Image (cartoon, rainbow over all chains, first blue to last red; front, top):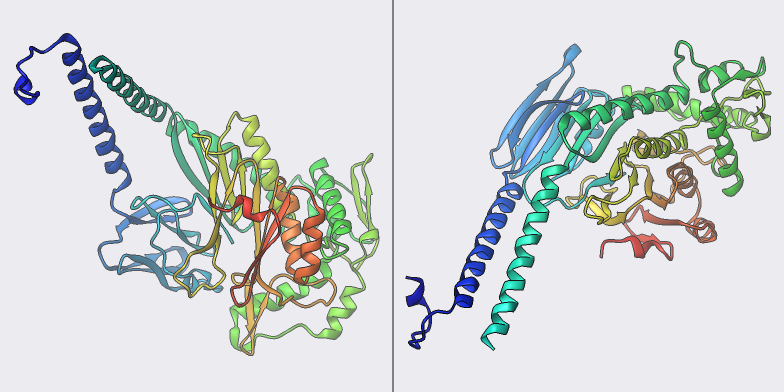
Length: 136
Length: 351
């Protein structure tokens, strides 16, 4: 099989040729494994992950439109809407409404924060992260 | 000739293989983790770091949280805590007596005084009497938008009489603070968090953490770079909250801090006009020059104070201040989205 893939100049294969082929195959295999593993890690579907008081409460893929009502203690709430691949807090019981005013988020590492309710919605996975943190 | 090709292929093969192996070996040892907690400085704290296991990371997070909570309580102006004399204790004793405090509170006030001098009074920690009036109006206005009111100019000017920095009497030997004006109070909101983040970063280093990114409500401080020695990338948020564009620019930092002061998150509206939480000690009113100002510096406490001060200064004045300081760069975002930067800022922007 291998032999027939070589130029048919009639010369017998030398030891170095075999080494070369083996090395090339190994390289290709290593590259294949690393690339496939890497892309598997980096293209996991983007999700909006909801944290309440730092504890994970749920994960919602951005590819599925949905509306989630986060009911918290004392009747507090935030309404999380996933639409067109973006997560947005559309309503909340907090007085300052900073979380509602914030633009919808979609990129890995972006988040929506509601301090009064101690809710954080963070985008995880998905395409490679643009930033490691944000200053505001 | 064939031998040469063979050797080259072999070498390339080995390098690729070794490279892939190293990458895996390293990832296998240390993983990137991110954790967050509340309860400190009325905001969310996010820590990104590398650890061998989740347990190791959560132990580190616990220690960092305890440390930050210590600073939060020490610099709190609204609450008292058992067994600790904090800024509120000092304020409550204004005009009455000196209060014995921990060295870290004295250190903060000393930095506050230094920043006051450096910014020619635009950064003011003895400004509590004016800030508290604005604070109360803002809270009421947010809770009850229909009845939102501005504080009266008369009351503001009256309170501004009680903001004399020289009346903060520090006795470093005795480790006491005394406010000699009964009507005055300290407000360390523009520096306490930044100072605490700087100390937290130093504490993380003491714990053996070499690659850490700490964000306490957007006050971002980096210990080292990432584990691959690349810098951390920080987005400067677009003040226009309606815009789909999340960041107006990104900066790369390692062993540096970036802090932003803006008018687009903490504010209230009176008759459709926005009044933000930062108040100019020259006018007793919220400044209206910019949507946000970001400051890059080696020291998070200084960056915090400077971003507050620059927010209250016209661009030219702020620029000449920044250019006169070593290791400090700044970016101003105008209300119309116009971006201006100090001369060395670009060097930190994403390449």
